[in-house]
Image (tube, rainbow, N blue to C red; front, side, top):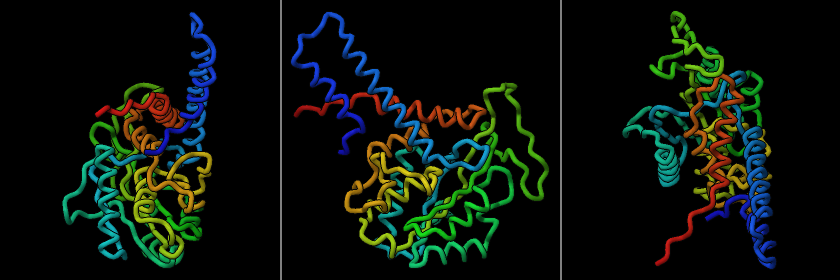
Length: 300
């Protein structure tokens, strides 16, 4: 099991106190715990600032209905474990899994030419990537970067603002009348949530050479279930997102940090009107999770 981030700081603080008699009021110990907690919160906040990447003016989107994972151009012995792993992560996040034969809304495509395939897909179906309603996707410049970058794995999300109560679109769709969304009458709260509706993940097999199937599947899961900034610098953090920075020293799969991030994203109540406040809510849950001491192992 991956050692929780910053646990070493807590251990150093405890060791420093052992040679001294315990004071009647453990002022020094309380101060150290507070400092450690502050460092965790700062690390979480910095991480979220790096990776969180919703469309401009929108809060983080996540899957709310069932997900259906599909894989194309992968041999069955590779495709099925990949699909199974992403489906397991979905279940861990308390999402439903589509029945066999479902239409994939998370599509994983393998190729030996990532930029070429990305450009061909966008040229063939541009509205599948930028549907044309507010809050659907990133900018045209980001779409161009999706097509031209040299990353081993590239991804594109499509999301939709919806009425939190009914699940109906909260934006005007092509050929339809403007939606009627009830107002909560609050300057701080919103009735609108942002749902992921499509994720396209392209794996360039030549550039992904040297990583294990488990590492690759966990990396794909991270970028499929969260809107991760492809330009994020995650090297200061213990995360599978560092997989292609140095595969020889990368974790075997998702770390405790990664699991905590996804769990916090899907547990947070994102009804704040401000996108920044929504990210802050995710950070509060993640920081609390990272600060809580690990449960002692059960004795035989």
